[in-house]
Image (cartoon, rainbow over all chains, first blue to last red; front, side, top):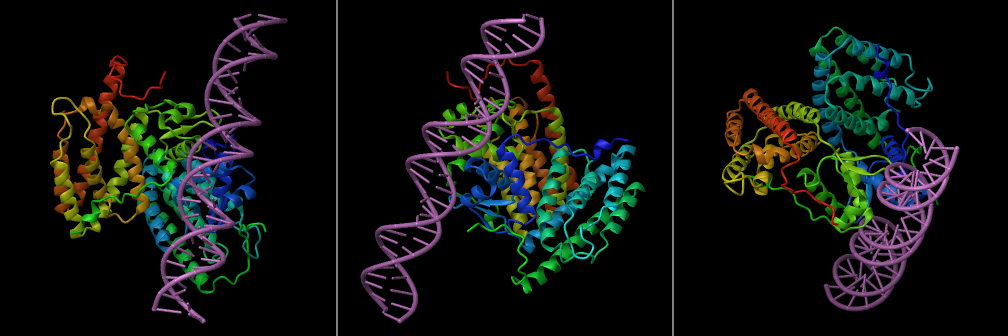
Length: 247
Length: 247
DNA sequence: TAAAGATAAAATTTATAAATTTTGTGCCGA
DNA sequence: TCGGCACAAAATTTATAAATTTTATCTTTA
């Protein structure tokens, strides 16, 4: 089988601008740079240890991806979150990913099915949290989770569509990151993945689509509930994992 | 009725980077900057009469949109065209726009239907070409054409999806621009628009989807045929509408 | 002919200057 | 005394110019 389907082509970023772009993006998606925050050049220059130009280029790229909002003449901001956007992104993701999954399944090959099986297996045996007691993000699990979902739609035959799905996944990741600590263990995600895998291998397209959609909607529901309680008992957590300016 | 649905919220670009971004984009989409061309900073600085920073920022934004390819450490290039990409873009556009149209029709309001009727009417009475003899691009027609199609899917309720459709339209526009001169008058586009409009107003979703898809596929077919003959009788046209470096 | 070195060109980054927005202070009037 | 307006100072963003690094080309030499 073609194991390469599982590997991500990693290229060494040659320019500072690209490497900063990736770091900035990671910090935004993880909410270390919190939604709505102003991104002042002075702070960024200090924190990322780079000049203005590469930073500015990175910010401009992120603006096109709607992770950063650039207000003309008055700087850049991390895109704020909203229940509205959460809903819109989830809806859109369900639409396009069920579409992409349908096409993927229509193009199914043994290689693809086997790669999917392996991806699921790897995800299955990787712990969700680094610490069994309290939640501690396991980057490896996140990577494999993403890879599994990417593989599901990866055979649809449209790179633009795949790119769009990736962007939606990115933008939704931020919402997950905000609620993930609290929603830990309230849900058996791995069951859902297993059922999706089964439906795909059974060539039951309608069922696979249904389950995938349910999967995303359930996620959104939990995030929504979690966000509501968070905004009520707000601001008093003290657990500061965000980037603060040096003083 | 709500005429605002027809107007595009035009904001005055306050920064040079944004205005250059728009000019560059227009030049790429119209193929005045031809596919594959290297975008040397020195040339761009002269031609657009601006410094490096705003140009660099514009190029970085266009890179994210896949209209410009940035090769690390060795500069920027206008994204090359290929039959492969034409096919992929068309396929994707059919998928997502039929989806978006279906949703739009599900959310149909009288306002929306009336706006659509008006948009079609305006398109109808605007000449396709500025010159009835030989083809001469009429920017007004292009604008109205785009507005009509945007309106069709504009009620789907997903800004990300609309944005994605716009991007696909942009990337396909370039292919149309390459063949549009020659394909002039071989096709009755306005009939197709009229039929789509009728199906929408009749609330015949399936038919509207079918016609829209056909519309895009027919366009791609013509472009493909046109591109084939162009590459055969190539390079001898002499009609130079592209940007050349000063000497 | 092929490899190595030197030169030139081009891209990236840093540094400096200009323009714009935001903030703060004082004055006037209600 | 409080609120609004105008003006000035500070901060920040944007743009230009200079310096650095990397890549490409050309020549020379083995």
